[in-house]
Length: 82
Image (cartoon, rainbow, N blue to C red; front, top):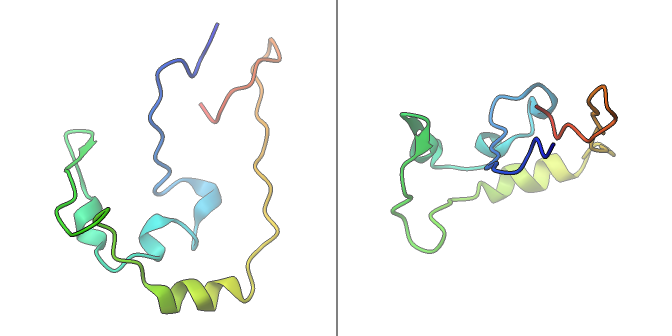
């Protein structure tokens, strides 16, 4: 069984990103609201993301040495967080 065969992940609000997730480092947070389970296309130039560079620099001074947890199902297949 391939539990992640069709998956588009976003991790906003997930437990392990508290204080260090996407919306904590962008200026245009309102552009990342979900409508009907989807993100609306971004309309700003380039990729449409306005990075809060000062916040990124400040956070990077004490960045955690974080490792991705490896979750598994009972059959030992990788769970990918589901």
